[in-house]
Image (cartoon, rainbow, N blue to C red; front, side, top):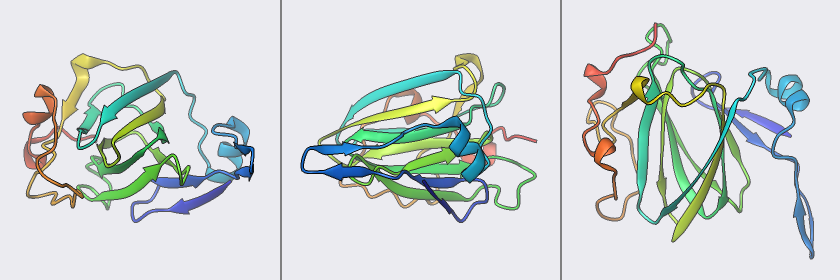
Length: 181
């Protein structure tokens, strides 16, 4: 397992060791001991989520103002452009974002710590996205940032208008968003 820092400290790219041959491949997608030793991730995961989305679906940018969730995310079918926005008011990188390609082919995972808004855009015909969370989903505390907020200026690799949920279509601008202390 190799760990790569991103431009935002604590937001980590995790590349598993993949064993493959003409029969297929094998890799550990989660090993609590190795994540703690190699990446310093000691969080306890309480929920696994699996979503399937069609091309050009944009989900997010979501976060919870209470019961914040750390997320270990990966793609098992297709490809997405994954984005995390630092919502931690006291962070030196508050309001900054990082985006990267996650795919079934590259097998990369992203560790998104508590205090980040998170979302993704599907680039392939469809994608299946898996993620582990450190706290339970609490819809009463969930918030959505406006995906195309001018202040954030996220460079989504779009080809046309994205397909959005009703909730995501009315996300709030970053400047009006509730942040973490």
